[in-house]
Amino acid sequence: MARRMMEGSQAVASAVALCRPQVISAYPITPQTHIVQELGQKVADGDLVAEFVNVESEHSAASVVLGASATGVRVYTASSSQGIMLMAEVLFNISGMRLPVVLTCVNRALSAPLSIWNDQQDSISVRDSGFLQLYAENNQEAADLVYQAYRIAEDHRIALPVMVCMDGYILSHAWEGVDIPDQSTVDAFLPPFEPIYKLDPDQPLTFGMFMEPDKYLENRYMIQNAMERAVGVIQEVAHDFERAFGRASAGVMEEYQTADASTVFVVMGSLASTIKEVVDELRERGEKVGLLRLVSYRPFPQDLVCGALARAKSIIVIEKALSLGGPAPLVSELRSAFYGRPAQPGVTGFVAGLGGRDITVDTVKAALERARTGAGVDGFLDLRTDLELEGE
Amino acid sequence: MKITLGGVGQPGTSLANKTGSWRVNLRPSFLHVTCTACTLCALSCPEGCIYGKGRNTYYPDYDYCKGCGNCANVCPVDDIEMVSEETALPVGSLVFDDDDEFRSMSTG
Image (cartoon, rainbow over all chains, first blue to last red; front, side, top):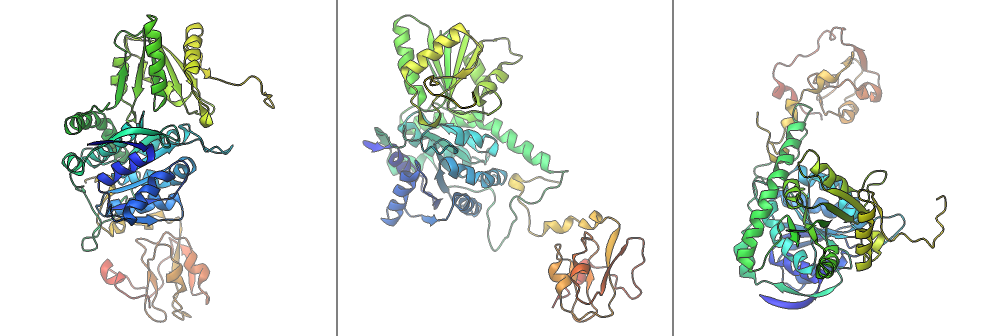
């Protein structure tokens, strides 16, 4: 185990290489580029024995890893923003064929207006694709989730693809100290991929075959059940990870100062680090504030989340994505999860940080204040008042 | 019947799905009068279920023919007609009992 200063993208690329993928295919897009650039370099230098397939689009990149995975080899791809959108059709096919593809989504806003900066609208928009979605708080976790993602995806109880999400720039381009394990540790944790079915010219098979109305529903039901089983498998793999690597993994979620908290923030991704600062500061003043950081958005571990938040009076969700014309995705899901349960905390949802706007300590404190004065009233944080908004 | 993970199955399983039931009233009738064996009917059939070899030998497999009418439309010598399902097959039409024998006929 060596702790090295490295860029988030390098940390992810190093973790991917240690998982010994045999086929990598990707199309470069900001801010994902450094990950696949680094992997391409490793293949070119002979440090990683893999086929690196250059393609002309993200649709093709996803299609290449779909086909390669069906032949029974471990595969990897990565993308961001418009690239995820272009992959969308294939993502549903990958999960429908139960192929354990691992994909890093370096989160970036969607056009239009054009923005290369961070929010989480890209991965949230493919929420229903059948990929598990795990959100990293920092670069160590963005790397650690890769080893775990392959274990979870290739588990025969699950057989579904995993998307590891990391905030663009905030993580992908930030330099931090990251522990990169040695090959033997990863090999012991992650055995070779054993496919359930594989394409073989001598014994041909059809994947994702035509299903009429009398069977399609059952197929989708099976995927839904696998997703629900995945909550337990993620926890199990996190436990194994801790034993193998000597550091903790959060599993489906992390609780920070929630035991006695009356107000709990719920967020995903790197924003959690900022909120931990706020929690520490407010706790010094005696305020009972905590944080629940959701790692696994799909599957949504609603029993565990509701259990952890059962004692809270007020829950504040801050999310970097919208569902235009409806309540924001995470807050609506959280409210729905509490429906019919004995504990009924107030839930207030805020949208912030879209298109890369910084979410600062002051932003978080403003959310706290607004939830105190207007619990349950959702809204945007840090909206500028000095701009004329045409038509408003 | 087992639903496999990922809808994985043996190749050729679409043969079990007999799409002939999709036809609505009309089916092609191959007249076998002026056929030149140009093969356009077989090539334009979206089901790939028209078989034959040589002039006046082409037939659709009615188990799969959806009655789309492409074959009748493309036939350059008007030797295929769309007729009501109620109409009897032309005198001399071949009736295959064995599907494999039928499909083994070349479309050349």
